[in-house]
Image (cartoon, rainbow, N blue to C red; front, side, top):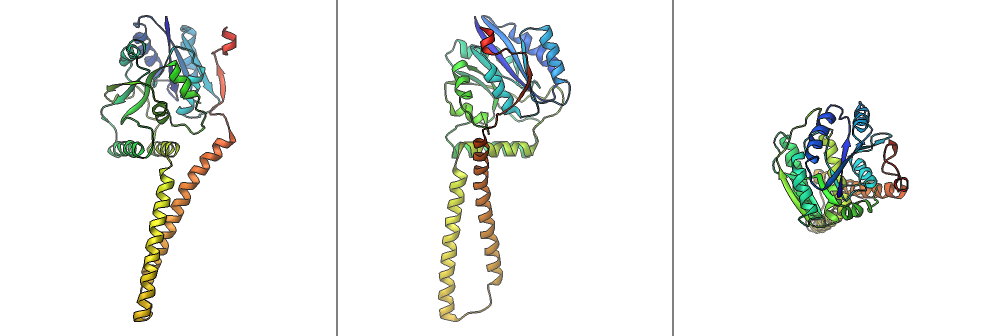
Length: 316
């Protein structure tokens, strides 16, 4: 019998977890020839999330959990779950029920019988999402697909089920600044996409503010493309060339018509524009250097406070 482990990142989800567990357990219990278990990852929640998970673990021995020492972010939670998983198939699903559990049987069938390596979900609409946020998201996918070698589907979600070889490939990438959507795309493998409509959260509010989404997008672009560095070089070259042409124009004009004091405002504007471009270029370079600095320090992506998952050597 094949095994499936569902990784569930959790951050302040005490209100959603009971209904989530009930809904998903009913779904996976109907799977044939698949033994399913759960890996709940408590990402340093400030509520009673870990207590609820422990109660679930007491009533169902299929429930495993990992609790972080503090909030390290969803990327770290997904990585921890994948590293601790041992099943033939590994899935990732959010605890807020925005991911449709009803897709799980078809996704499992895709990787177990249809020959696909990954079964992944993507949203077909953005109902209920702010217009600015929707426009920003669509723009992000267009930009990153043009400037990087990772082709990310518009609306792609972390909700997916993968074969063991795919999980091993993902966790073999040791970078500290992780952008999983890009990593899932970069490793390749045969993927079947499942479309579904946007779901409302069962309880609570989204943990993703516009600023968090913006910084996450920046991480994705910088992590999978050097285009910003090339753009800053191109803009600097064009600006310098324009300045050289203007200098020649000024010299010729002065020789022909003499000097005057006109043009002071244009000079000030040029100084501000060029100075701004320089600072932007330095900022882009600084972002790459900062990420290199974080990688060189080689800090762990997360620290585990407690878990009921035995080390692999203890299982044998």
